[in-house]
Length: 294
Image (tube, rainbow, N blue to C red):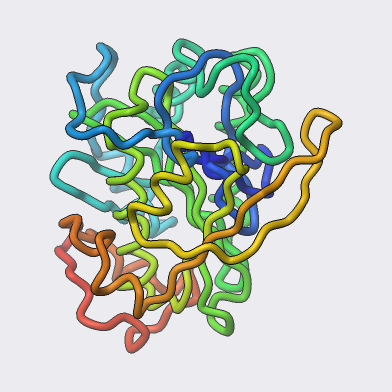
């Protein structure tokens, strides 16, 4: 997924990540239509989030609690002043698919994600988003995982924030990827959801590094990276629509995160203790994480 703040990732739906965040895996994204985003996270960060688009509001329920008995990551939630991020259950997945099919992730002529997974009919992209999220649940293990978190504003889904890692117990590196539906871009949501992901990475899981990858023309995602304190980490040349394009790489260390702007976004981690082992993190890897029971 790229940050539509479209962050670009290498996994296609399954692989989308809206803003080209570079990590193992990409998060799905849709082609038609565009609005402010994140990730490019396409979310362009202009300030407070305006009123949400009408749609079904969802909240964690009994089904989620039942699933968490077998899959503890369903207990995991990240909350900020304006958002909630959680592993989507079947009800959430349906709402996300309808959101993508209705609003799209970016304009038809844009291509913010690696692999071009979002350049298709809205219904196709919606299906790819579901594939990406299902794949993350099915294939994740401590040495390779892909965590897709649905992002909710006022109880309604607005996008997806992904985190991926390979050999995390050894390397301690997490990559992010994300997308926002067009109707929710340009409101600062992309910055807030990425800040929440960084707190989970550094404070919750004890990561050493966080990375992101964004195409050079992904202005919104580049703005998010700069605002949160990432530092440029080189470039690589990718092929997009048959033409060469520059993919910029970005990196943040824990030492850079802790005193930086990303750590200033209040974020509470709920239900992490029960699923930390799924990500290859050990209790002593996580210094003073700010947590509350699920």
